[in-house]
Every structure is written in C-alpha cells, then in structure tokens.
Length: 285
Image (cartoon, rainbow, N blue to C red; front, side):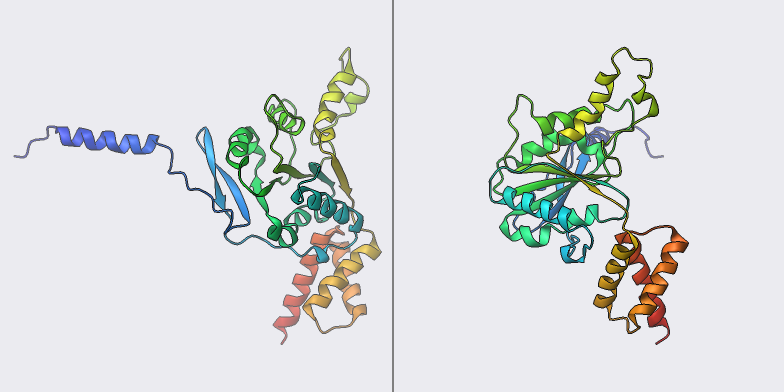
C-alpha cells in the first residue's frame, strides 16, 4: 500500500506554484521603433505597455464636415512633434461624428515624425504615474488617448487626471500629451440643481470643481450632429470610394431613408449605411 504522506518535494512544488502566481508577469519592453500604437494593461498595482499589432490607420480625408476641428488638431499635433508648445486636447459632443477617428487618423501623417499613441481606459487613470515613468525618457512623442472619457458623481479618478493635466510637484514630461474624447463637454454630469445651489452655501465652488477638469485641456472642441447637406456629403464621399455603380440620386434617396429609420445623421451612421448598401448590391451580382 502506497504511503499518502506529503513529501518535502511536494511542499516545495506547491510553494513554487504559489510564488509563480504571486510574481508579476515578466515585463516585455515595448519596441517603439517597430510599433505605432500601444495599450496599457494593468497587472496588479502596476502594468505594462502592449503593442497593437494592427492599428487602425484612419484616413483623415474621410472626415467630412469637421474641417476646422481637424485642422486645429493637426496644427496642435504638428507643434507637439516639432517640440514646440502644444496643448492637451478634449474632443466632445455628439456620438459617431468622428472624434475617435480623428485621433486615430493622426498616426498615418505623424508616426514617421516620431508620434506614438497609447490607448488608455478610464480606469487606467490611476496608473498614469507608472505610464509616465515608462515614457518620460523615451525619444518619441506620445499621445495618451482616452476614448469616451467621463466621470460620475463621487468618483475620485478625475482628480488624478486633473493633477497630471495641470502638473504637480513632478514636472510633466515634454514628450507626452493627453487627447480625450467624451460625449460630455465637461466630462462630469451637470444637474439642474447645480444652477440653483442644490443646498450648498457656496454652489459656485461645487460647479467650479466640475468645470476645472475640462478647463485643463487647452483645446476643447465640440462636434455636433450633421445637417442634411453635410450628411449627404459624407455619404457621397464614402460612396465614391466604394464605386457602388448606382446614381447619386439613388444613393441620396436611400441614405435619407436610412437616416429617418435610424434617427441618426452622423459620420458613423453614413459609413454604416454605405456598408449596408454595398453589401446588398454585391449580393445581387
């Protein structure tokens, strides 16, 4: 009969497994020369940068109806990669109007000049000191891109971002800017009671704290839902690229029907319509 006693070898093996689970994963040094975009992956109290192997290299020429905003962001980004003063950027407003696409589209023209993009999630804000420490002395320019950024009442993460934007006792690196997108102009909910005090003796102080975060973005640019002419201009742009083989009148008629049925007139809705139309046409061939 075999003995069921636990041997010293068994104990050492279990200790080894436990140590492996407790040890942080091996840090992989990011290759900024080989890759253009990265994601921050949190691991415990810290994290590491992971390369995005197939970044979305959006064509900025596909953005229609936001020429002034596009040009302002391009100019700011050019200043940044040239090493002259530039601002953090907040792009806010209607859904599907090209905020995220505009940031992604910066890679193609500026990556050859040393620009890299690091994508962050909202919950990665508290990891900003670790991220900055890894990027501070790297000879590239980094946009920390936080898509769909907003904070609810009582969340403290926004103070960490506010500190980075405004600077604390540690000097902010010259090779890092933050570009964020949000559906909210001031990143935090604004309530009716804010306008009447909400029971506070000094309501302006409470409102001021809500505005303080968005004020720290030097460029705050608003996107609005497209009017009908702008919407059809986007449709025509996408349709021309796809070479759909139907008349302009037919495309526009179907596009307006799509807008009425979905209740949306945006760049995203235009692309979704053209995808649907092209698929339907190809099925008939």
